[in-house]
Image (tube, rainbow, N blue to C red):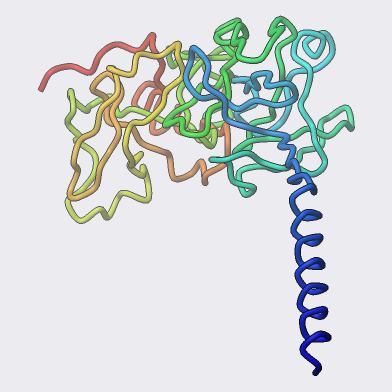
Amino acid sequence: MQPFLRKTHLLSMTALIGMALLACKDEPNPVITTDLNLETTSLGRVLTGDGGHTLYVFAPDADGNANCSGNCLTNWPIYYKESLTLGNGLNQSDFTTITRADGAKQTAFKGWPLYYFKNDTKAGDVTGENVGNVWIAAKPNYTVLIASRQLTGQDGKLYTFDAKEGTGNSLFLTDNAGRTLYAFAPDKKNKNTFTKADLSNNAVWPLFEGTVDEVPSTLNKADFGTITVFGKTQVTYKGWPLYYFGNDQGVRGSTKGVSVPRPGVWPVVYKTSPNAPES
């Protein structure tokens, strides 16, 4: 190539590269809009939807069904998005869609249907927390949650919180997936007297294992602790070691254990429960 032509060629290439760089510089970065986020509030980090408004779960929904209907929905509008784009710290696997009894769809978080509260007027408001003792701001890391349900024993009879036959919803603790937690009446403070050393009866009344992270604000976190039971870490509440009932079969909201082997032996627990007796 002639020197003049080579120089002209180089100048043309330089000009083209410069134009390309300018074009890239002028192109705005794409803005990613997220549907659900974790935002910091007076309650800590909570799940938020449109406009940064706090989302809530409802204690009667422990079974995974949406039990807020009719006039309830005036105060607690449902949250639903067909396809979710999530902010940092949230996992797609935690979100599902349920079909309500009225035919509408609703987004659920770890099986709990999600709602807004009409009195939350701006981002960061959490005025729905503890309303009626049954509304809880949605958080990603609860150790326990609260159910409000009719207790139905394995014998098919209906019970109240005090282990007597009767009707009416009781408040009690569940794990974060809505599975009922029980105490064992013969246990002592921080002492599991049920589980055998070889864990051969653990399938009957499985230990509630784990660590204590977040609890609903209506509960006192200091009431929770852990003990070591034959190499496993069992969560306690008010000194009571906590268990599942094997025959609940992991079904959300099932309370069959309250009648086994008779009412009062394996009670559900809540903040009205007495402290476990000293050893």
